[in-house]
Length: 257
Image 1 (cartoon, rainbow, N blue to C red):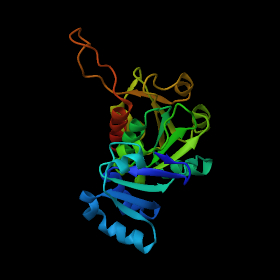
Image 2: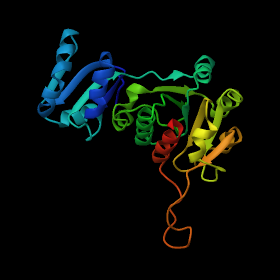
Image 3: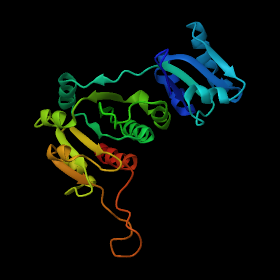
Image 4: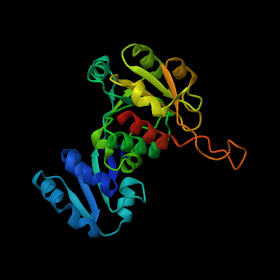
């Protein structure tokens, strides 16, 4: 939940706030917690006090719900300055190419929980670059995505772009451009071989429609997750796709091999 008056974002969830405390405590402007969690944040309270930043134990957990706009606060809310999503530049992408770093590009992934889960998987597998379009259909960094990322937001860099096709066109020959699609001719199991020694941008598509046609046209490879479920032989319902966050986990795992 955003506090527009103070230009702040509420970070809630025990793991998210604890990781924030450990990795980027300087981001925390204010802290609120229940009596049950008070012992878990004693050290942080001392640090905030030394910096003359406020913290408060609430008597009613509904106060936390009001602060973060969610019942899933898990007993703690930290207010941070609104995260700045930096525009992606050629200097940044050139450094990726030079260092053989991978990046995950989201093609209008609209659900904040999915964004958070993708960030969590990327952080877990050591992929630190996430790119999102400046599109109203694309979720940005929110209280929900921060919580679902379970601390992963502290280990990734989120960048913005105006046009996905333009970025992919500009990256031709500089990084491998790989789209995920149900009809991809290559398996995700081939990703480590395809990308061996090369930086790549992996595009994950919208929850309903997948990657757009313009994106497909600008990809060097299209990959799909091998299907192993029921339905292909006529027995049972066909489950032919995964949630985009689940797919991201598989992609990140294969990239890390």
